[in-house]
Image (cartoon, rainbow, N blue to C red):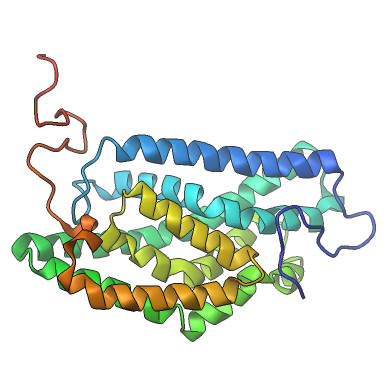
Amino acid sequence: MPHIRPGAAAPARPGVLLPRRELAAGWTLMVLIAVLAWAVTVGQSRRMPMEPGTMGMAPPLFLALWVVMMAAMMLPSVAPVAITWVRAIGRHSAGPARVLRTTAFVTGYLLAWTAFGLLVYGVLAVTGRLVGGSPAAARWIGAGAFLLAGLQQFGPLKRICLRHCRNPMFQLARYARYRRWAKDLRVGAHHGLYCVGCCWGLMAVLIPLGVMNVAAMAAVAAVIFLEKLWWRGPWLARAVGVAFLVLAVLAPFQDWLLPGLQEAPMGDMDPMGDMGPMGDPGPAR
């Protein structure tokens, strides 16, 4: 069964297809959310130093920023699945109800990534302590992250989850048997878990490259989009895996590959934005 491409018509029974206007509305909603999330992410990255660890953020603040990042990076690739799901249930809802169901699906999807964000926060906290205690450890942490990400690209979990993300129609048909209570939220969360299984290795490289590194986030988002929607996606996944393994070999000897594991200069702005770009204090209070 061919994988879903943006705007492609999904197999469905007569009477289920959405009018073009409502299909465009679904895509517009997803694109607007992603664009807004990117704007917030870019703005926040300019106010925060790139440094190892949690960057001084408490778990609630980190998770809030993490959810925005995931919306920016993941929604372009999950939009076809969300819209296909709405089309599959189209005869049960119309107009604004479809928007609400799409929103519930996206909310469930982001809940799965929020749970993963808790694990990421713990890993970052440990990483920050290790690098703070021994800056030389950054090289081996970076190498380990690239190695883990490279191996994951060839692992069975990646293969199974990527197959689901590229060809979700069978699973969507099974979701149709779910009870109606919070159905769309549960479907989104379940699909989100498959997505976490597919992409957690790609997220791991943000540890050495920088969690707030917008260029790295954009590159990872592009890889995720192409892996799921391009017809050569599985081959791309393997090529990216090879590239990560090469970076794992180079990381202990090339500090420029580890911007997210380098201590920020003392003059950089703190997470609350109280210091100027050269370390000068803001206006007198």
